[in-house]
Image 1 (spheres, one colour):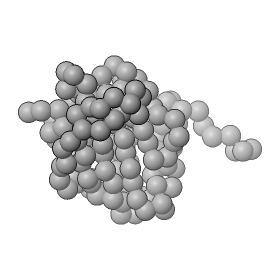
Image 2 (tube, one colour):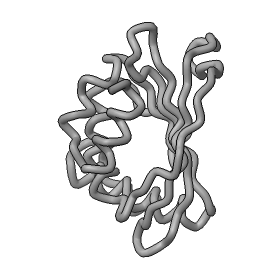
Image 3 (spheres, one colour):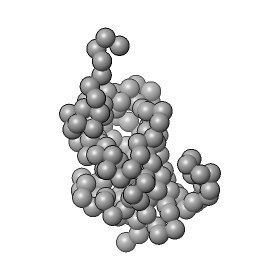
Image 4 (cartoon, one colour):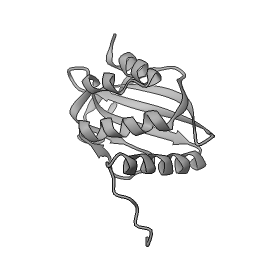
Length: 144
């Protein structure tokens, strides 16, 4: 089974351990709730641990294959888009996962796009709370 299908199966089953072999060590994940990417396999796997707890009823709707430039180096890479629907905090969200692969077929860049804006805000709060709970991000400063 190729990487995109293995990824989809792991996420739909909530199998965080199965994701480890699918990512490059220097993977970058571009999130709709953070300007700078999450970088490196340990951080991205930690983030997926939070996401797998945050998304409810996640369901992939299909697949689009092609190629696109990566953000890191501007080089064209084989790419797969996986559209999905899920619930986050009781809100229905619609999104896409853009997976971009290295020459060995592992995911080197991962971009998540989500709509509507209210779902992005709900997702951002839930992910931050999960990252803080897991010790992957500092607690927000209540003083601003």
